[in-house]
Image (cartoon, rainbow, N blue to C red; front, side, top):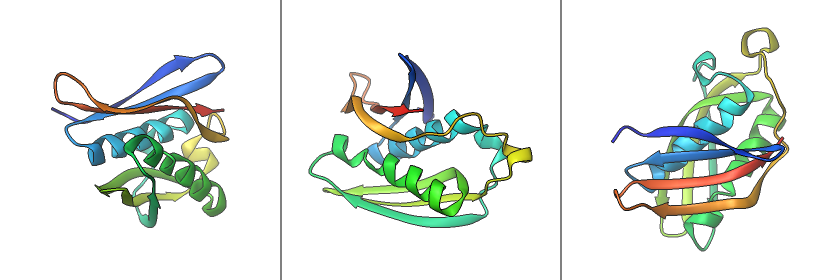
Length: 138
């Protein structure tokens, strides 16, 4: 299976989803979906790495790492396009790769305020693919 991401409609907000063969890859893909809400991820060079980690009692709550990404984007003035995620027990360790925001190059469309618990899910479907999703407030 080729890991992928997608958006889904949710009222005035936007749903983001990652689909892959492992939870870590699915978390990487949902992060790309997050970037795609703002700009074309293909326009973001992966030149700087930022370490991110969090802990939670289950996979669904580990999706709070999306809020960590939103925070890092805001305080660093960066966008990310590539991610490496490792999940072990209740801990997520990740590296997000990107570059400083260039308004002409990236043409950001919206500002994401936060990830919400709306439609929050992390599960393995009948095809053994991992799916992680949440809604982001724009």
